[in-house]
Length: 155
Image 1 (tube, one colour):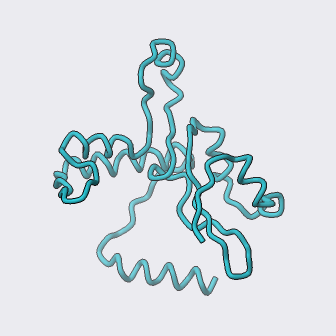
Image 2 (cartoon, one colour):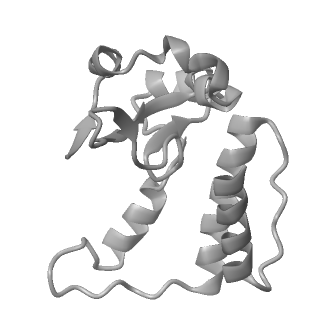
């Protein structure tokens, strides 16, 4: 079973989060005190009937964050807000003739644009967590993933 919950009041009907708060990372709740605009949560139901989170949360792919600096001024001028999200990538795709329609081919991104995307995602990470992003070595991504998955399940 797959469904999306788009309203926090609906979420609280299904999830007694009071028992989970001590175990959830601080950034999960901290992001609500940032310039958190909106998000989506995707849940599934186990065979035992337990509702579980089944996708990433509070990333630029599922959420929008606005910059606090200049927010009020842009609102007063009815300008679009400066945001940290994947929206700028979506706009780039549209400007380059791609809207995800059948038969369309995804345009190729230059290395420079990919670097820009990476920098925006890193900026969001640092703003939400308050910690510097430390780039991992990328010489053996497959081994790193296998090691981390193994550590998670053994942990």
